[in-house]
Length: 235
Image (tube, rainbow, N blue to C red; front, side, top):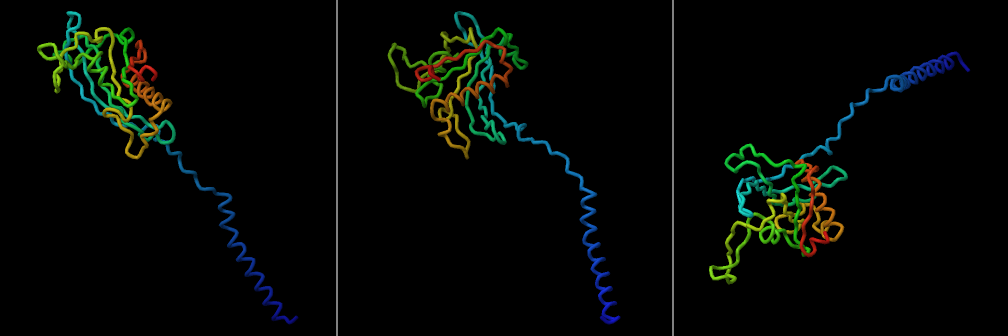
């Protein structure tokens, strides 16, 4: 092997050594200097609050000769998927009546009986497939439909809406629930109404409504009752 050839080999080896060091240096730096991990981002999916629409008015009804002041609330309450991102699954319509301890004129700042001793009754009709209008305007609510004319005979609709002197509002607050797919209650636009059809599905959604309502209105400490008609008794 000539002297020139030997020198060329030594030169090539030196270049390869330098190239190897250049390639290895970033890898070594990566091993020794790990980049800072990003701070944990809180999962806000469980803190989503969906707006619920309500309309609140105050009234008085006479029951057993006594004036009963009450607050009426018509509104919707959103059910959500308890798994995943808590996306809305349905909007449930309800009408609630709550006794006032002050007259409607003074109810800008309403006062209510002690919830620990004031009962609350959740009411619904049956069908299945019926809204709660029948028990609401036919039995328990502070207003009722009067289908009788001045001569005591059933008259043609539209019927008059009159005070219900037989209402139980003097004994309990009432919440009339329209189960999903009845009345004004509907499944979410991208949901499947069949998820609420069936014995278990129906019970689950109505129970979830009651749970949320009790929490929103601070009524967990109240004596609680349910009142149903036909299939509503099974629910």
